[in-house]
Image (cartoon, rainbow, N blue to C red; front, side):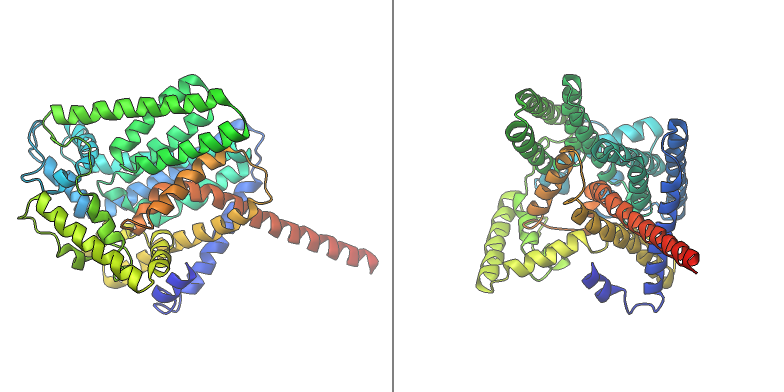
Length: 463
């Protein structure tokens, strides 16, 4: 984060560093205020939480009302194709179109179609629902902290550091599948933590929903399986809970298969919910020149006039070239470092996707981008402190149910294409750890203040 800040913002504006410091101090001040509100009154506590959620919701709605509603890139692929679309029409013309190569995106397309059928072809419906999903994500972040650390003050802080992260919430103006997908996955984790049969069954349904909307299911499932094997089976010897976890996965596989069949049967996509271009993510992900990110230069490889079979050969040949380059130049570690920085500590580019350049000056856009990244800086700093504090803090093993999918995601991203916005789904998990870091800093500052008061009192009495 420090490297990225130095390269992109330190010398951009003389006031940037002052703004960062002031923002951190403001978060500490607000955080201190939140921790001073008593926690033993349940009504008062929920009033605090609801107030925070309402402040976020109003702010987010103001954001989407001020930014252009034009849908860009992949988001446009979802929304623009809905105009005059009729169920049964194929989503593609050739086997090398977007929805034929990435047929798994048909799940979110169906969601967008349902929304447009209910509310009409108005992008505000998608945007408004995104805000609702974000507010619910904040709520579940709060509930996770209660479940894992049993600390209401920390739970309030988790909402605070996530809600102010414009890098997290600015994508709500686009037809993005990340917020609804993230919400489904968080609900899945929360249901599993209840450790009751009916909730394991419901978790299978919400896991399916998450995979239909946002196809990062394999890393989520990998994390759940490792959690079940290590913490439920080996550590706790809880065979019943382990079997219930696998019941969740069986329900998922059945429902996902049925959904894929349904997509085929309706004629929406003859490929169901598959990935018919597995090479491309690796071609871009292992491209050293672009640090494993999306690159217009790599796009030159794509020839829309060729068939998928022909393009698959081209992409496989390019993949071998990328691997050979990395081997010959011993560049694997360097690539992984750059990709890790790009994924976890660069800008998410959410404000760019909001297309604010259409309506604002370059100076204003730069300032908004910086303020957005300031939210990421705050989240990164406090989550880093919180991660160190985990070695000393007491917490439930349920935390590993959140951390293991994140770790699986981080490993997979070393090989495939990365973008800063891809971390959006896991920022609630980062915020949970960050709440521990912020709470610890506030506790340390309070201890210093208390010690200073005692010292002054002793000196006064002595005099």
